[in-house]
Structures are given as C-alpha cells and as structure tokens.
Image (tube, rainbow, N blue to C red):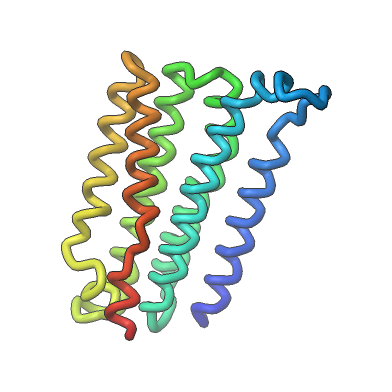
Length: 190
C-alpha cells in the first residue's frame, strides 16, 4: 500500500478527533467574561489535548517521510495509535468537567501513556519493516526523548491521586518538551 493512503487516513482521523473535542466544549450563554470562568478548566484541557494532537500529527508526518513502504504490521500499529488518540476527547472532557479531579487526571495520563507506547510500537514496526539501517532508525537513534516521555507519564499517573495539579504540570512539561521542534528526521532526510 502506498504510504500516502496511510497519511491521508491518519490526517482525517486526527482532524475528526480535534473536531469532536471542540464540539464537546460548552459555549457560555452569557456574553460576559465571568461566564467564561466555569468553562476555563475544560478550555485548559482542550488546549493541552490540542497541543498533544498537533505534536502527534507533526511527528507522525515526519516519521512517514522516512518510511519507504507500508506493511500490514505498520497499518495495524498505526490503527492502534489512532485508537488511543481517539480517546483523548473523552478524557479531555471528563478531566475538564471535573476540574482536574484525581481519577480523571490519572485516566488522562493513562491515555497519554498509551498514545506514547502505541507511537513507539508504530516507530518500531516501521524500523523493523525497513531494516536497522533505515532512515528512521538513524533519525531516532536511542530515542531518549520518547523514553523519557513514557517515564514522565508514569510519574504523572502515580502522583495524580495525591497531587493532581503536579500531574497536570508533568503532562504540560512533556508537551513542552515535544513542542520544541524535533529536527532528527529532517536532518536525516536532507
């Protein structure tokens, strides 16, 4: 299968996820700034989740640029990633509507962890399919940033029960870590 079909499908699914997340936000009925206060937690959760989706979309795009062909294993690994990403609107809404309560915050962290693990699996499937000397393998190297993200998600999940605000800070920290443009793949491709 040409990788362009996989890219187009993934782009469409991520666009739908963002749309669903936005449609789940309640619009205040009053035209005052005070009316925004009750929806502020939902908005903050939306911003965090949108940031994560944008990061995954960007990195997914770069990863597929370093991919020569798509195998069945890659298709399934990609679907696995999209499944976990598709749960972000639910977790985002639940965490925001409950003002970052411990259990919804922990679940949000679990979904972020599963997104990271499924991305790692997709990356592994591509490298395995293309060979150890593939462009992607050269680009990601030991993938310290990816492994650190997984560790931080686990820390966020564990501390969310006792200090949910600290967990939110950890989740934002990981997002900020990935927000800095990752030039590894671009360097290898050019």
